[in-house]
Structures are given as structure tokens and as C-alpha cells.
Image (tube, rainbow, N blue to C red):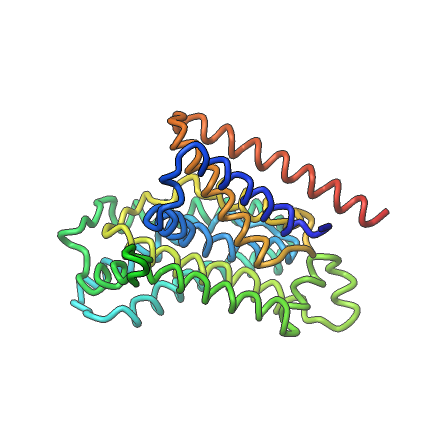
Length: 316
């Protein structure tokens, strides 16, 4: 009961019960499956931020990386007439990976503050994308058919359709969980986030740890960007603006420490679901989108305060 994951799960359960009592249609399979589908993109991005936060850093560049990977890959698919989806997803992931490694280079080599580096790289990537590549939206008429077909993939369960992308998301979550909990690389990420100097003294390669953390974060962002395009059937270079707030809120809600060294994949999944559930509840209650930002901001402040209080209590 002391685990933050348990608290988040109980909150999720309570909110679902309340919403179900207000509107019984909430429990229909179609609505629940749509709720799970809404978790996919923000959830994959949250996994990327989790890795960085566990390492003691912060990343606000992932929305820009996702937009660049998505838009460049879709344009390349249209230019070269590629009909599959495997190679494009590998390409988008590699674009994100390279961007993430660039973050790691500046953070480790020049001992720069991660927030400053990722703010700068986000601005540079978005500026280059819009200034050199273009600003036109690739709508459904010009989207690669293979990408649309992939995004439409679903399983019929009880007369309702569950997007296959939910299983892609859960598969990535399992891989990240295995990395963080079952490998020496994962242990090095936790150790580095807890105390970088101590991690270095016990023999961890801190340079490799930083590169792995930010490289994986960029790779997951690139993958999420193209997956997003396949699910909504368009590619907008201005997409993902403002995602930083939602994603960081979800990770903090899941129990990850802003000071590093603490966090879990399960908590992140629950945090993402809670955040999506809160936004869905606000829509059901017909609350204006403007106030959604206020609610999410308050959630971040409260969750961060609780996390800081928990960490201080643990140290004491």
C-alpha cells in the first residue's frame, strides 16, 4: 500500500466508478477501447521521458523529435513510393535516435543542464523542419496507403474494435521494463540518477549511460511520431506542440522522481491512463479546453510536491 503505483491505481478506479455512475455509457466496450487507444502515443512518449527522468535528467525535446521523424519519413515514403511499414518505422526511430544522441553529446561533454540542452535542440529541430522542409500538412489523400492500413489494424472483441496499436504500446512498455529492471544498463541508469558520482566510482560507464538514456528517449519519440501519423492519417510538421506538459505530468503522476533514481514502467502506464482519464472526464463534463491546461498544471504541481515530500521522508 506504500507504493505510489497502488495509490494511482486506486485513484483511477475511483474516477472510473464515479464517471460510470454519472454516465453508464462509459463502461461500453467501444468507449473503453477508445480510452486505451488514446493512451498509445502519449504513453510511448512517457516511456521515453521515464528513462531520462530516472537518469536524473529532463527532456522537453521529444515532441519536436517526434514531429521531425514523422514528417520526414512520410515525405520520404511519398517521394520513393515505399509500400511497407517496417523500413519507415526503422527510419523514423533512427531519426529520433540521432537527435537523442545529439542531446547526450552536449549534456555529457559540456556538462550542460539537460533542460537547457533539450529546450535548445527542440527549437533547432522545429526551426529546421519548418524553415527548410516545409509547413504543408500531408492529409489523408496524400498519406501512404500502407501507413493508413497499419494504423487501422484492429481486433474485434465482443463486437467492439480494439486497436492493435495498444498491443504495440504494451510491447514497448515490456521492453523498457526489461531494460530498466533486468539489465546492467538499467541499473546504471538508476544509479546515475541517484548519484552520478557514486555510479562512476562503483564502475558504471556514465558516458554510456547518458547516451543510452537520451538515445532511447529520442528513438521512442521518433517511433511514436510515425505511429501517430498512421493512427490519425495525416502528417502535420507543427504537431505535438504542448505535449511536454501532458507527458511529464503522466510520468510524475506515476511516481517517478524529478530528482532521478526512482520510477517504474507500471507507474508510468497508470499515470498515463489517469491523465487521459482526467482529460476524458473534463470533456464529458463539457469543461472548456482552456481549463484543461489549468487542471493538468495543478496535477503536475501537486504530484511533484508529493514526490518531493516522499523522497525527503525516505532520506530521513
